[in-house]
Amino acid sequence: MSLLSESTHLINAAAVLGHLFLLGGSVAIISPRSALGAFGLTVPTAPESQRLVDLLIPLYGFREISLGISMVAASRYGSPKTLAQKQSRKMGWIFLGITPVTTALAAGLLGYFD
Image 1 (cartoon, rainbow, N blue to C red):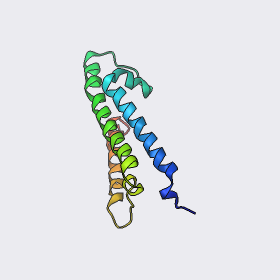
Image 2 (cartoon, rainbow, N blue to C red):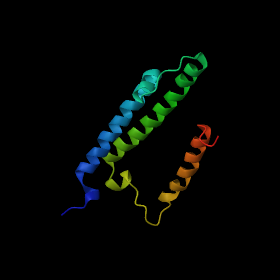
Image 3 (cartoon, rainbow, N blue to C red):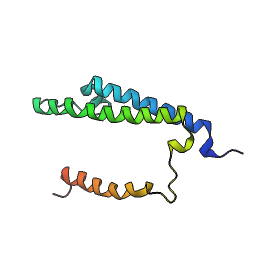
Image 4 (spheres, rainbow, N blue to C red):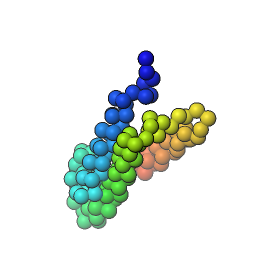
């Protein structure tokens, strides 16, 4: 019986997910306002807010494209270990300390502490 971590189904699923990231990032770069609708958000009516959307959403698109390229490349040319780093004896879990901080920051910015 083969290991689940070496399953071709998981590698192919990572490739599909990478292609979805590429597609979503491309849409965000080409048409930022329509990408906003994919999240169920409405396009702002104020000109300053529209300018902000037109500037920030493409940055999100570039992030998604870089993530998609890395996932597709790792699934195509790499090994399963390049898709998911083992967490033992490495500092892979250190990002979990950042999650509560960013959650608290977002909650504060949204006014939950007012």
